[in-house]
Amino acid sequence: MSDLELIKEFLDENNAAYEELIIRYTDKAYRVAFGILRNKLDAEEITQDAFLKIYKNLKTFRGDSKFSSWLYRIVSNLAKNKYNWNKRRNIGKNIPLDQKEDKDSNNITISQIKDVSAVPPDKKLQGQEFMKKINKGIDSLPEHYKEVLTLRHLDDMSYEEIAKITETKLGTVKSRIARARDELRNFLS
Image (cartoon, one colour):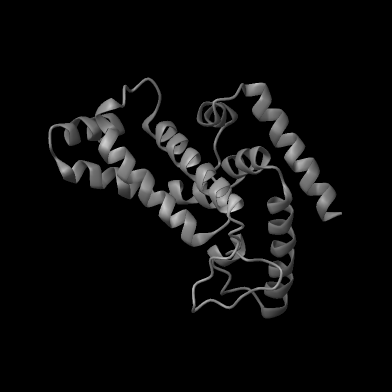
């Protein structure tokens, strides 16, 4: 079933259709939130909040754009609000008790998400060190650069999709991605 068919089913009071939407988009919504917040727990919270908000407001979805674009916009807005809320309160550490604290980073890194179990230990260590540098570089980027870079490279979205989600012009998206890459490159060199 297409997303629009699932939405219609849900509006006809078929909750299984909404569960299917959740299954389809939870991982992608999480990656968008994580890309902005760089924190596992906050990203999980935002993902849940986004699906709750969608549940309450799905009847207002007009279908002018893809459901995924609407979802990503909601996730992006909630994540930005959470990021700003954390920033105003100087909240930078949300580390579970069973997770070791990393002196260089307060958050889960991309390398911890990917499976690296088959990699030799020396290569794994080099990769982890490089990922720490990349994460530190991404964290140093302005929020609007971080967002578009994450949507492009972690979620493999097209420039057009990113423009819709961020509600910016296509040219602005392209220039922000280029500038973000330049800043990250300069940071790493």
